[in-house]
Amino acid sequence: MSTKKQNKYTPEFKQTIVNLYHSGKTYAQIKSEYGVSSNALTNWLRQYSEVKLDDNTVVTAQQIKELQKRNAQLEEENLILKKAIAIFMPHSGND
Image 1 (tube, rainbow, N blue to C red):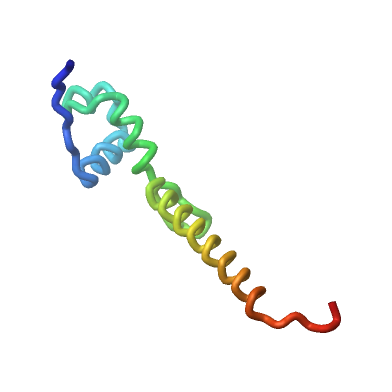
Image 2: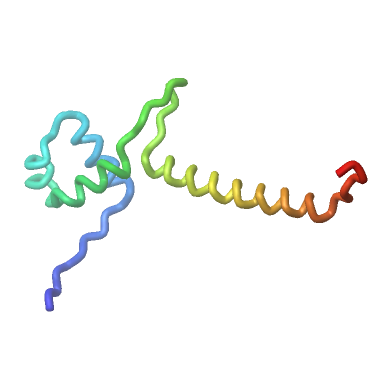
C-alpha cells in the first residue's frame, strides 16, 4: 500500500497558479516551479478559471456551480409552495 503524502493547497494558492497559467506560464514551468501535478492544474483551471458575462461580470466555475445548486434548491422550494397553495386554496365551483 502506498503512503504518498497528499498536499493540501489553499484556494488562494490554487487561484494564483491558475492566474500564472493564464498569464503565459506553461504546465511544465508550473510543475517544475511549484511541484503541482498536471491533473491538479487541470482541475484547478476548470474550477478557478473566470468567465466574463455580457454585462462584464466575472464569475468562476465554482461560483456557477454554487449558483446552480442554489437555483435547484429554490426551484424545489417553489414547487413545494405551489403544492401547498393548491391544497389550501378552495376550489371554485366553476371547475
